[in-house]
Length: 139
Image (cartoon, rainbow, N blue to C red; front, side, top):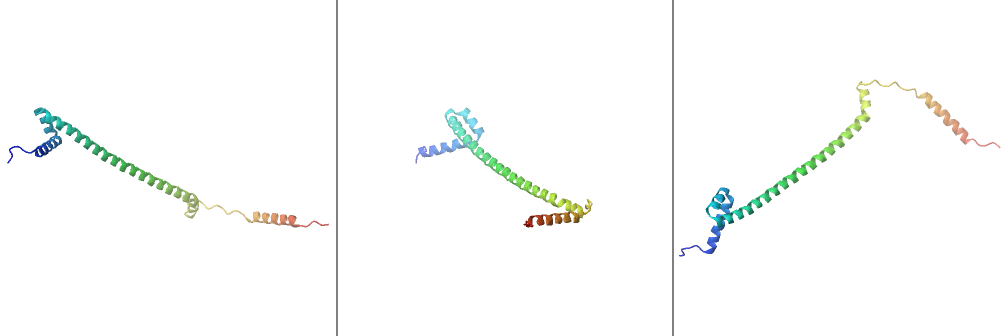
């Protein structure tokens, strides 16, 4: 049996201790005061892990921003649809509104206009124009 651990075992134990020290800030501060070389290693590894976590958090935030941007785009599309529906509804009201107002008695019906005199005048003009255009010249 060996009295001292092998180099591989020592390296593994040192790595595990460094990771534990890095993950616990209180332990990291205590080792800075206790021993300089391990504290420096822990501090450096801690900076690397903190930077890695920060990058991960930035990636998550970027993903959430993308989701929010996508939802804003969807809301814009829905507003466009609502606007189109509003324009259609406005057109329908513009066309059928006066008719509906007359049916429900909101507005009085207009008095009927006399159309027979105008029709007779148009007929007379049409017949006269046809006679003038179609007559043959006498020799």
